[in-house]
Amino acid sequence: QVLLVQSGGGVVQPGTSLRLSCRASGFIFSDYGLHWVRQAPGKGLEWVGAISYDGSNAKYAASVRGRFTISRDNSKNTLSLQMNNLTTADTALYFCAKMSESEDCWGQGTLVTVSS
Amino acid sequence: SFDLTQPPSVSVSPGQTARITCSGDALSDQYVYWYQQKPGQAPMLVIYKDTERPSGISERFSGSSSGATVTLTISGVQADDEADYYCQSADISGTHVFGSGTKVTVL
Image (cartoon, rainbow over all chains, first blue to last red; front, top):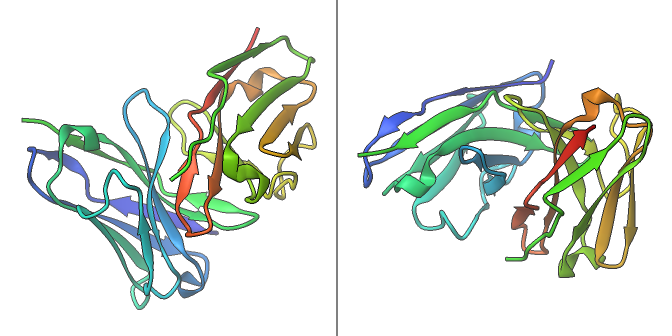
């Protein structure tokens, strides 16, 4: 069974940092690129970024580029999202996702609230 | 980056057909994927590569493409189809984008 289990999240102040993690099981982790997608309260889906299967290449949405960093540890089947200089606009439910060509798997989502 | 445009809402009676469009300049060159999201749940892929249906997805869901517009069609709409639907694509550099989403209401 393909599973993505997320951890991290919480309430932080503007300008601070937070790290989200996503632990995978049920598939060959090192074979797949992975994504982060977020959803602000009551809003639509926003692609945050993605990382290649081997971690050599990452892409980011313009809204987070330069502040967020996606990384992965293929030895631990773990995907991470390091978020720096957070603003209130980053408040959202964050999903990790395996968005393969013909199938998908999503984490349960983790809420990040940026508030003073 | 590029934008994908969807209608905010579509209303349909049970048993009828719902059509949701997604338009964008890049779509004539890139595939579109459709996701269904119900309240409190993660999204779920219902159509990939414009027209293909993942394993386990009802045949009532179909996709079509014409130039810069792709369409998700839900035939014989059921109450359980009530959800938000998002199109998604990527440009040649690997930057992905989601459409703004369409809320399907079953009357």
